[in-house]
Length: 157
Image (cartoon, rainbow, N blue to C red; front, top):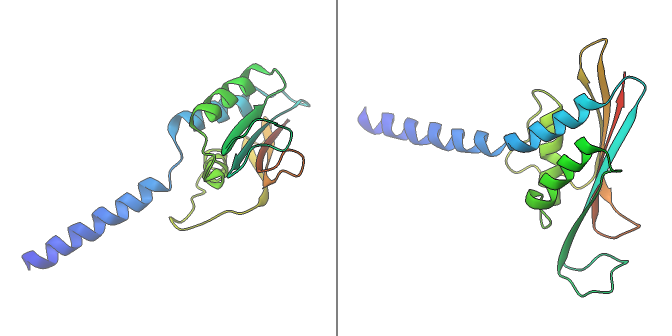
């Protein structure tokens, strides 16, 4: 009986660990939600987070093994998201940042521990029925700069 309880506790502990890994970082969610919530009706704002691993960006002459860039259009809430991503966004596993972005903005969405997003385009509705934003999230190869690009576009209503 005791052995069965110990095994059950160990399994529950492992399950809790996998669930915790599926949650996006709180600070990322905070800056993403502030970005989307700041977009007014009939207004569109976006940012693009670019990453590359194993080489430098195509337009750079400097030798590099990895890199990241973020374009925010000088929009203050976009600047905050880019500051976070430049410090914490993954270059090697850029799909993790894309998955976390979707999880932050789509209430209840979670990815399995071994899920691996290679490319995708998603639209989520953020806010209420009468005020909020439709948010396009794309994650794909970046033909222009090389590497991968995570682009988030919020269209307020």
